[in-house]
Image (tube, rainbow, N blue to C red; front, side, top):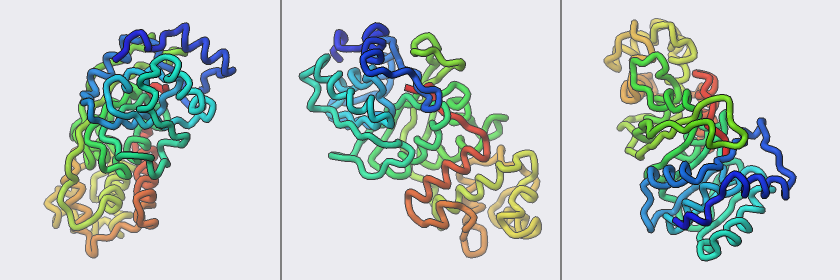
Length: 320
């Protein structure tokens, strides 16, 4: 990493003033201004010189500059077209030797499809409050080359993502992330490292990809069960899954066939148990899921995001 290339508060404010940019609450724009935090994130991301990094929300390029010095290539996905257009100029002026490693994609990370060049191997992102879980789920579903990652999100969301079964904050985000990866808290991030300072604390979540549970049904079918179980999380599974199964009696039979207590609640089950429940439904179908209706990866991700927001009110991270 070339430390003298990293942006500080003065440089970021200068770029913002020149471009006429004022941070947008709607887009969740809170920009990292602390070089020490950038160095810490790059170190915790565990990058190798061969890695291709997918960075979401590069903003002014604070983190991008650090990532370019540690990886072979960075694909930066930025929603704001003004920021996306400026990023290559920032890198060229501050770290010209690294400019050829950068590729910028102007797109919504929660909907982005094909990415240019070699498939990315690592996700590193500073995610806006209201989009963190849907973005991570979409990328894990549609970019199978991602082996591991490090994301900065709202502290409460970090807790939800990494909560174990039985925790009072365990819910839809916890289960759906667990389908794809093992996630853990990787440390706190103070409000003071952002401009403007957010009203909440942030946290880092590290994840490592793993194979999904072995099943006779797909992800959309399993996630339909998860959504139903947590839509009324205080109810027993027999009651909560009645609509999904067709009746309370049918739900009870499916649960017993899956080896799950019908009087249990969704917050006590792991992703493997939800998978068994989906597989025990006669015919193994779960047509209630938006992803199942559309039958493609994008549809699955849309269903994932809808269920996450509906079931637990999960928000996003600390912006960019």
